[in-house]
Image (tube, rainbow, N blue to C red):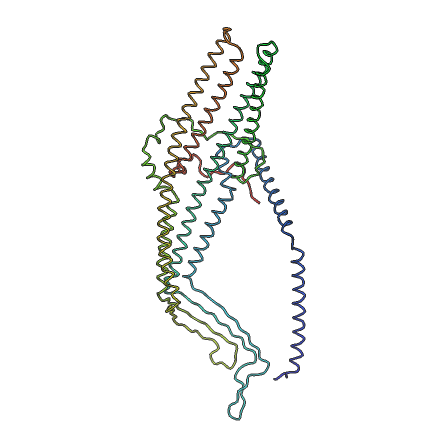
Length: 497
């Protein structure tokens, strides 16, 4: 039955007023809330700084408390860096994102199912004139439901897109593995730099102690008239220069530890001690068997092992697949579909039924966009080949530099050990002379200081040789095989807020 337009207008007006009022209240609440949450850039920066700094200091302090003051080893630093380093975290996120994109591309082969519901209400009954009569041909309120199922049957572009996504996942996995190796090398370099800086501090401390003792003897000789005040002034200037060098060395040692903590994503100002355990091999054969092999063989090994080249190979496969995919855009796509319809209209004889069929789509002309896509994909394919060749040349140079650097470090280590042996022999000679009364005590002090400096220099040379070996093995791609402990967790995991 007809309800009439005047009543409908009044009801519509009331409903419209209520809807507008509700929208106004909701909008006001949203604006008020957003205004309360708005803040200046300075306050946002201060809030982030306080939260980030507080979390970093707390995590570092808790981990150091778990260690109970034990010195850090290079393997423990490497494990913590692998757990917390931001660069490695980003590489892992990129790998996970590539896997999600691969799963998304695979979904193109699965059927798509869509459901649609429609409810239609008419203000007046639908009437139609049939001669002199008026008949109703539809209900005033009708509910229609549709389920549509589409299954791709022949879609070459979708298949090639999935292959591209799979290649991208493989590339990100290799990038993540190489990022782990590069992080290990960074930790080793900064760890050795911190140890070498501490060794330099120890040498300068012994040197300053010897200078001060010699200055005390010089003051006594000056009082006796055997030395002039000018000699004493020059020696005091040398002592002041030694103090300045020692202060600079201590600041450099602190900075080296800060850099190590930074790569581990820990609070850089924390107080830590380092242990060389596990850094230097217990037995070092001379000459090293690796250095006796021709460098050409190591270059071949690097070209077969480096993960960057594996990733470049996958990149070329990806670009070739993109080239083929651009060509496939000229091919038709075929889909099968099935639609299920149902309605509540009582005037319809068949209120539910299925409709099935096939659908084909072919791009005839797209403004030469497909042609340009083929050209672009071909150029990117050739570009990927050139980038791989350039990367291979860079790796060859890295192997050469690392091989020669290891040779130089081994020679410096041998020379430093010989110098330490000579310093020990000199101390024994001067001590015997002092016992016999043919040498002064000051000469023994200078000999002991020289021995200490030579021993520290030999220890530093051994650590630098171990680092040079690490760099060489990384440049060849052998470091992952040479590690004694692979991917072990540190004592006491560090959670990141």
